[in-house]
Length: 560
Ligand SMILES: Cc1cc2nc3c(=O)[nH]c(=O)nc-3n(C[C@H](O)[C@H](O)[C@H](O)COP(=O)(O)OP(=O)(O)OC[C@H]3O[C@@H](n4cnc5c(N)ncnc54)[C@H](O)[C@@H]3O)c2cc1C
Image (cartoon, rainbow, N blue to C red; front, side, top):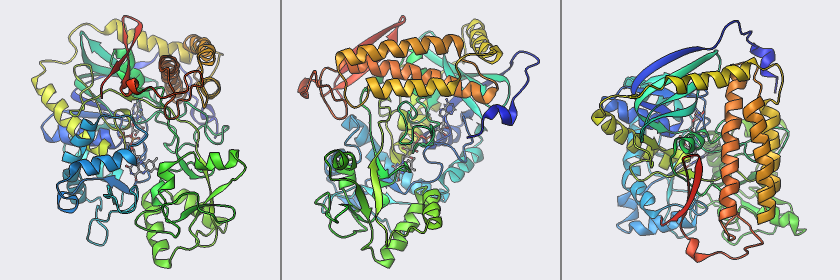
């Protein structure tokens, strides 16, 4: 990575400019959820602004494409809706602790979204039919259709623009504006210009995606070798927390499985069998490549490659060598739509052919967990604040569905809201400006990159694969020391580095909350492994909530 200051170091002759934008709905993040919210809210007549950190055409997890969309189709699944939900809970949604009400709300709506996307030009059928494949066990209800998502962001951006939404690329929003108990806007920093942007909005929707870069990548020197692209840094949940909204389960990290060192998603796109060096399958689901089911061991046990290596049986491979020509073409077609071309092109260059060469698979490193608490209307615990997508309840179908639902509800709320900013927020805005000005004005100090690396080290060493009270307490002390240094000393040389620094400040907040919540979860569950509390406590089958009240963090447990 070239140093950004060699690309566009901006000499500061004067203090930061500012711009004020008034709108009904502010969608923060122009990913799948943010664009769907913008489309629906604009359709209902609201003035909508989408503020996107990157460029909506190429940003977020959906940037390079996706190929699986969860949907319940009544004429195919029949009346047993619970079977669909149970299958999802055993498979794609298994590692996410989520309420069944949300899943129910998703399936009530997802099929309508599928039809809309198809109408707008995102091909949702294959050879003229609904094609269900992947993410389900043999002989179980199929939950995901295949779709051609490669150009989905272009289509969604066009739909938003056609309905009159305004898209502002290169704006990183970093704090919400709150007036009384309502959210009434946000503050952003331009990533190319020395400019603060203040949004006055009647309602705000957070569609800022997951939290990557909290833990080290599989190639620790390359911070951005992350399936999410590395720019979803939990900004939404950090802003929501600082504004007083409830977050849940941050201490529950996740892991994924895929080609070693490439950190790609798309486990269900592969048509092969996961095998060891000697050709013995790791799972029991398939023994030959099967285009309908893939190999569900990837879904059932994402730790399998790591466990094989640790127990002296590794490595594990995705073996597609027995694939038919027809199935190979089918798989390559979907890989293109799943955002795999960078990897498949590289393999071609290296002479690697899936038909001849098994591909080494790895368990990817930990990634930050947790969500903003949002209900089936995409409402958060704060008035005027909505959240959808990976910040609240992820995957493409949920992002699209709850983005749309959130846009609709935000538009209705905005319609009823009398005005945007009520109180005088000028002191608050001045404080934000001052914070960035100071960062840009410093001659020396820690930069975003070294702070990010230090944070990652603390996270993996102290809130990583094994946790206990003393380790967590020590890690929290280290983290707070680094956070203090960052808040008082981070140096940025240009607007790009300002944005990176603001991301790191957000991740430091998320890291701190992760420690606090991990200390409070006195049990072992999923990847939260506490040998000092080795058993899973059934009384904690609930949502673990945190929120800030008067500078204090309040922790709570609540039924899903
Ligand atoms: C390679 C890959 C393949 C996948 N395949 C599938 C699949 O087939 N099926 C499936 O269900 N799921 C799949 N997923 C997951 C799916 O893509 C995500 O769940 C989905 O895109 C989430 O949508 P979102 O809108 O919540 O977040 P994103 O699409 O990630 O968008 C978040 C947006 O917010 C912007 N942003 C972040 N912070 C800020 C800020 N502070 N200010 C302004 N903007 C900000 C980001 O730049 C980004 O554009 C895949 C993911 C990847 C990476």
